[in-house]
Amino acid sequence: PKIDFEKVAEGIKNTTAKIRGVITSETRKAGVNIVTGSAKIEEGFVTVDGKDYPYDKLIIATGSRAFIPPLTGLEYAKTYKDILNYKDVPEKMIIVGSGTIATELASVFSLICAEVHILCRSTFLKKVEPDIRTYIREKLLKDVQIHENIPVTEVTPEGVLTKSRSFKGEVILAVGMNPNSELVRGIVELGKR
Image (tube, rainbow, N blue to C red):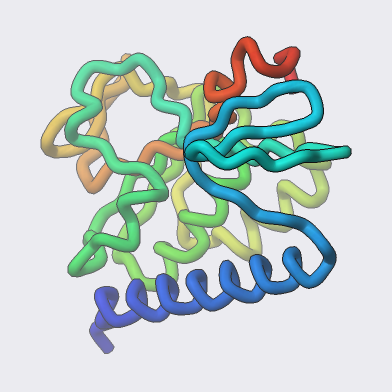
């Protein structure tokens, strides 16, 4: 049966909004004052859109975004943010990445997509224990073709190019996340974590 992906995506968006509402409500009930807007941080208080908020402890939640590798043809690639905008599920999907995001996307789309390939620059799920990695490959991704040590050199309108061959299909970049830490540069000390 054909999946109405637009309807599925709408359900996911609605569920996400409900979860966000519950989390916000529970956080406020715990005594946390959530403030959004343009902020200036001073010792002991924050000014947001002209209003001062004193603080003892301050959490700055800047969020994160998809890491975009330096490749030619990025205008033809999508990230996790674009997936819920699909009207229809692509017949062929190429997921560039080797970690948990790539694995999750491959798992979902292999159930509703004709053909899914994961292209890994090095080892698939290299930070995962070998026995767990084997289980994931054999049980959860049994219909996914995983290609290791095959870095992508270019994204094209038809798919991707590597040093050894081309792959055709919708391209999803799932190569990691970057924190939005530049938002607090000069305000707090930034490090690797």
